[in-house]
Structure formats: structure tokens, C-alpha cells
Image (cartoon, rainbow, N blue to C red):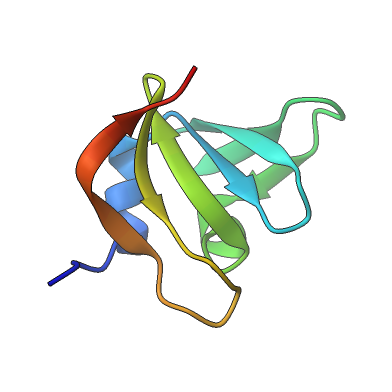
Amino acid sequence: MAERFYLYDLASASSLKTFEGKTYELKGAVGVEKESGDVRHITDLYYRTRSVISEKRLLAKRKNQHDDLMKIAGIKKIK
């Protein structure tokens, strides 16, 4: 059974991608958007997160915005 990826698990991630297509680099309790430099608190980003990445490995994802963010069983390498 898949395990849920919680807000406090974001501390182990390096970046995340939102449903709006924006990528945020995680730095402590904030995320910095790669293109615009927009800074958001991770609590604001968590509910808009589509996928979570750490060191080019996919840690968690959700298919639609209303699903829970779930850990990936076999951590997948991203190119």
C-alpha cells in the first residue's frame, strides 16, 4: 500500500513542481521559483504540489490536485 507524503517530509526534498507548471527550489521553510524568483512558504506550496524531487530522484507525486501526495515505492531517477 502506498504511503502518504506529509508536509514535514518536504524537508528531505530539493525541489517540487506545482500543478501550474512552476518549479520551486526548496531552501529551508521556503520555496524559490526558478524563473521569476518568487518566494513562497512551503505550507502554501504543499497543497499545490504535483511532484517532489530530491537529487534527481522522484520522491512523491499526485495525479490530480484533490488526491493525497503519495510517496513513490521505488524511487525513480529523473533525467
